[in-house]
Amino acid sequence: MSSSENNETPNKGIVVELEKGELSVDQLDANTHLTRKILWKLDTRILPVLALLFLCSFLDRTNVGNARLYGLEKDVGMTDHQYDQGLAVFYATYILSEIPSNLILKKLTPQVWLPCLTFFWGVVAMCLGFVQNFAGFVAARALLGLTEGGLLPGMVLYLSSIYTRGELAIRIGIFYTAASLSGAFGGLLARGIAEIGTRGGLSSWRWIFVLEGLFTALVGIAAYFILPNGISTAKFLTPEQREFGVSRLHAASHGDAGREREAHEIFSWSEVIRGVLSFQTWFTACAYFGILSGLYSFGLFLPTIIEGMGYTANEAQLWSVIPYAAASVVTVITAYLSDHFRMRGLIMLCSLPLAIIGYGVIANVESSKVKYGMTFLMATGLYSSVPPVLGWLSNNSAGHYKRATTSALQLAIANCGGFVAVFIYPKAQGPEYHEGHTIVMGLLCAGWFLILCNVLYCWNVNRRKAAGKYEKYTGYGDDRDPTFKLVL
Image (cartoon, rainbow, N blue to C red; front, side):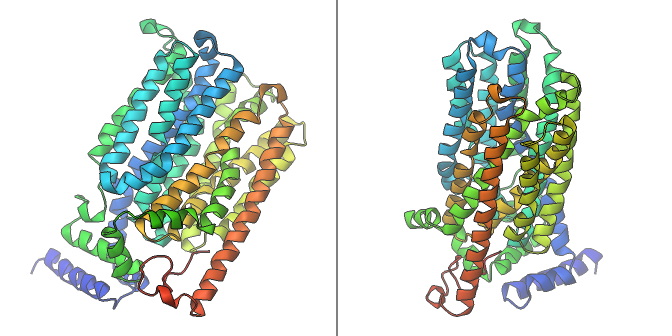
């Protein structure tokens, strides 16, 4: 008998035992390398693609700031207030598109819908390079938000169908580091593209939109041929690995009932309502609102702080890389710890104070060097809090359409932080931005208490389930089931 046959026989036996419930996921992970092989394949085939999509997302939403440096407002004939209006319109349509996009994701399939969104917003981003007036700028920004809004909630929902609850945060952390890296990479890329000058009859800022948008559209096309819809259709897995992977997800969901129910679940407005009325949705979404208010505004004042240290604009671009790079490392470490200890909110209670301290200091000191040092605390505290908060709500929402609703609604509420970022850092306040920093610090403090409230709420639900007060939901196969324990 060949070695491959020897390996397949025990693997099939493991699948059978797992499906019968005779092996727990923890026992299985300790006694076989099959789980590790599957996770390695998923991580190396899916996460790089999602990270690239998310990198494109951040580049295409933030490159307008780089274009502004090269004459966007002057060429289009906009005032500072009109520019801010264009930014605000993007967030309005971005927010409105998130819930509908997640609700149709299952019908259209992730393999089709996520690449389509990427392709279309890449085309819209290219169109920004050809706008001639304020009306065209606003229309293009509105379409950009409409096409881009479904990406992040769709990716979180997609990952939650591929990985177990205890594996989700580190995966979100890995692709979310693309966001922090884009903060550093975007300015350098824009600087390089601007060297094209006025070749082809287009000014530098137009080339930024055209080339970055073209790159995004091409990435969207490539993603269609790479991303699978799920484990059961992943061509890079062997038949045994696909069978085992699906069974493993079933076991992690406390038996087949939950995953089987989701696989055949039909859309129901009652599940949407259940997601909208969830206390966890509002606790985490409002806390995330404060985090995104800080994240979206971070790049507005960082160059000003660095220039205050005596560096030129080009040198400032290079120095701005360091806080983002540090944040990337800490984000991945925090996400790993969140998965390892099966904790979300408790991790955030430790990470958010870093950002709060940073904003508290930076709002009340004048030294540019001290301010620059505080940006490390701000960046690491903000970015490292994102994977736990995104994974937390997804972990604690069972039933496909409830989870689709909660993931999208959480992000829709949180992305309202974009409006805050646009209007609390006006040029007139620079370079100190005392009021803006104080507002964000207040939002982060409120967010910390909301996270604490959600931890206590989840603890109380688990206590009530253990006391038998949820017995009427036995067999429901969703998060109300007594066997479904909420992650703290």
